[in-house]
Amino acid sequence: MTTADHHRDDAAPARPSSEGSNATWTAERIRALGPVTDLSTAAHIFRLSRSVAYDLAKRGQFPVPVLRFGSRYRVPVAAILHALRMPADTPSRPPRLPTT
Image (tube, rainbow, N blue to C red; front, side, top):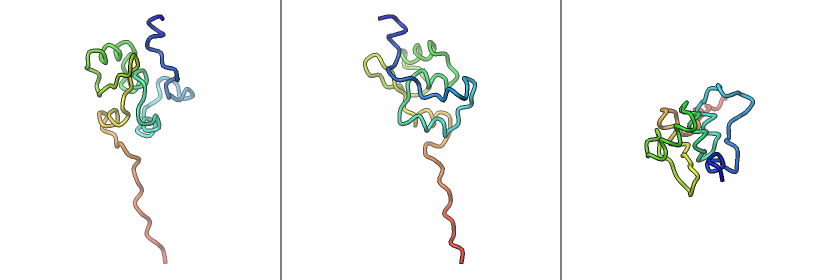
C-alpha cells in the first residue's frame, strides 16, 4: 500500500465538481456534506493543503476536532460550521400570518 492509498477514502469527497476548486464554501454547501466529512474536504474548506491538514490532524492541531477511525479521518460538519461562525442549522423562515 502506498502513502497515497493509505489516506484515500473509498468515497470521493462530497465536493461539487461543477463549481471548480475556487468555489466559495457557503453554510448551505457545508451542511449538504452531511454529519461528517473527510479530512481532504475539511482542508479545502479551511483553505489548507491536504498534506498540511493530515499533519495538523496527526498532531491534534487541526482547526476543529478530528475523529480517527483506523487510518481514516472524519471531521464533524457542525464543528466546521461553528469554527467558521456559520449557523449549524438551516435558517428557518418566520411563520406567515394568515391573510383574511
